[in-house]
Image (cartoon, helix red, strand yellow):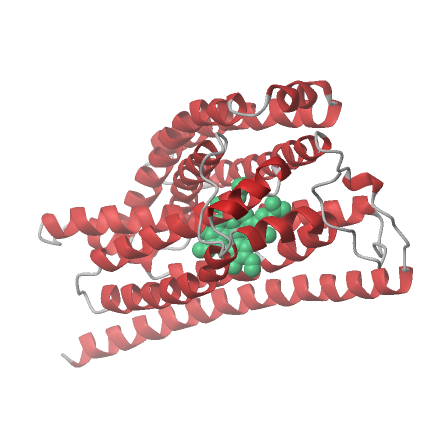
Amino acid sequence: MDQFPAVEPIPILAPIWLFKLLLLLTLSLHFTAVHLLIGGLVLGTVWGIAGRRRGGADVLVPAARQVVRRLPVVMAYVINLGVPPLLFTQVLYGQALYTSSVLIGLLWISVIALLVVLYSLLYTAERRSAEGRVYWWITLIGLGLVAKIALIYVNNMTLMLRPDAWLEVYRLSPLGAHLASGDPTIWPRWTYMVVASLMAAGVAVALMGATAVRDRAVGTFLQQWGALAGALFAGLLLPVAAWVLSTQPAEVTAALGGSALYGAARTVWLALILVVAFVAGYASWRERTGGWKLTALASLLVYLQVASWVLVRDGIRDLSLNRFGYSVWAREVNPNWSIVVTFLVVFAGGLVAVGWLIRTMLKAEGEHRGYAKGREEESNHAA
Ligand code: HEM
């Protein structure tokens, strides 16, 4: 435990399992949003470029537009769903996470600036696509920024597990301008997040095409090609997942297999990748002439797959920290139930508010479409 700074004098206010549960739940939602952002940027850019090369005459350009116009909203979810897990992780693993954050301080703080630029790029791309102007170079820059942000996150979440490397990282750059990229687990983890993003966004775009796009030619394209992309990238994700596991220290791999919970989570995680590949592939073929149920099932399976990775990664973190004498379960707890209950009530209220927000947004979109259609019919009539 020598490497870890002294613990906060205030004991943890709620049982560890409760914080863990909330961390896992909110992180699975954050990861889902991150996947939709990264994968959406890739699909929107690729289809946008391909559509322009074909002169913009077929479904590719409007299909890309359907994806790009939603990215600013997805970005809002990435950020807002990132805050809760950040707070829970800091409560449970503050001694490790604060240290690694300080060690890459300059890069860590630069995430805020990168996020602001990325956000403005997404709005610019959205506006340009609405005006029928070229935007692919903007989403391409956005993709570069998102890849960099993801790399900084992966670095921090990995460096927090390596107290033995902290001094060396500090020596390399006391300013915190040096990423700890020597760790063998960083690139596999980053690649995993990127490939999983293409799987998740493909399936999500397919669901969007099946349920939320009025132009049937565009909707069918999104459904068929989205599900196909989801299936293909799920296929690719399996070797990447194996790469993630193979780069873990031998002790961690053994402990993961020896734990009933994390061992089972690992099996479910790998199995779900295969199941998603089959269901999404089948949906892309079966529902190419209509239907949405298989696509919806594939989307649910993707969320479960993301959640199972969050659990496996939680195991990797706890077992890695155990190697250095840090056990989250040994943290001092002094429950203050009035605060816990107040928090849970506010949390539930927040969830209801978000649900209401989404419902209102979808309703407004429907009304806007109805209004636009009415205007279109009126002008056709007048002509
Ligand atoms: C474009 C923006 C973002 C991207 C691309 C992104 C990407 C990522 C990635 C790739 C990871 C996984 C790291 C790993 O497994 O090694 C991660 C973890 C995390 N992100 Fe984000 N993120 C973004 C924004 C945010 C924001 C704004 C917050 C908070 C305000 C946030 C909070 C977190 C937290 C707390 C974790 C890890 C928690 C844990 O390990 O318990 N993220 N993010």
